[in-house]
Image (cartoon, rainbow, N blue to C red):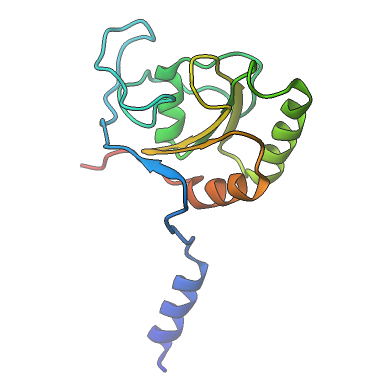
Length: 159
């Protein structure tokens, strides 16, 4: 095997595995058009929480948020390779909130946000660009798989 073959094998072995994980919904790409503000009128998102589409020019800080993050901000975080983990405070028992936060922050590298979200049917929802994983409880293995598969993938369109 030549030098090129060895380099190729090293490259492939270090490349993140992007396998299809069970239970993940994949949505059509709604693009990444920038809008002026959170209140700007735009087309509807095709998932809740959103997984692509119109968004503002700013992102939300990575880490734990006690505040609900507007959809138009979340989508920009996703475009930048982020993962948004949201929990429904009325569905996830309060003693599980800290467990979820600890799990997510231990697994995530740099581009993860965890925040509350009331207007969703799910107890816990993980989103990445075009992907949604819904959970009824904190499932560390599925959370780990999702974050390790999708975190850090940039989705800016290149011309």
